[in-house]
Length: 170
Image (cartoon, rainbow, N blue to C red; front, side, top):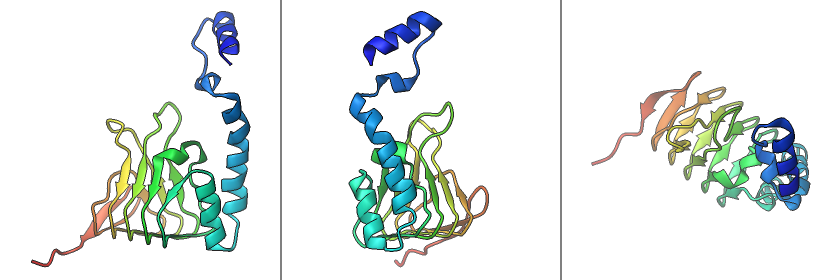
């Protein structure tokens, strides 16, 4: 790949795209991982098998977590996503750790969080920090999450806004 990168840079007089740094194994595995996550796992009717396929592809998913069918977990950034224990991610939720002209940044879902149907979690660059959904947080259906949600909070809307916070006993 280094030879191809040098040829590209010499021919076009500009830096080679990022994918010229990929190893041959990565080039082979990317379409396989994409098919496993976006076709097989996303349409599997059994949660235990769906979770096993996501874990096989490198995603960090805690025990007792439910991920609904037709969810999109960013297969390019499987190592940047962390989903906690006992979470419920409803059907059709979209996770994206990157975008055009944007760095790859992490998404973290805390233990016991609930994410409603068709929510979108879009990680944006803020000092490379990404987005964190706190433990026991509730994200409403069709919500666009583009900022951190604190522990125990309820967030809804496009873009999300916090409508309720868990009261501390004390």
